[in-house]
Length: 169
Image (cartoon, rainbow, N blue to C red):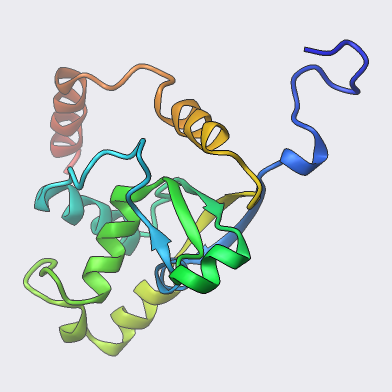
């Protein structure tokens, strides 16, 4: 790293991720590329999808997602506005549910009460957006930075907490 920069650790102003809050439906109505080369396939099973929707309806923070802007000239040709860097499983769950591709607790989206449909469409998520001139390398590095840190919870620990919750009833 250069010693004459203002910061040795923070990116240049032009490289910063812009943050904001957007509704899930706004994001899903944008053209999304879920299949960047560093992404895994669709790995969430129905249990994971249900737990995620449970969290949204319980108004529990579901974390943030990270997108990368697609250059305008490419977006015009492809209809893709953003590449999904982090949050693929969550965003694809919402997108699929809004399109009635699976049932949640016995209901497709179109079968929900109007109140629940509006609630889900208006539910928000924090969104980080990498600038359109970010390189494939920078996007893959951002993927690693958000997915290769920390220590995953062990099944044993999660089961212990589940048992605690059950005992609190």
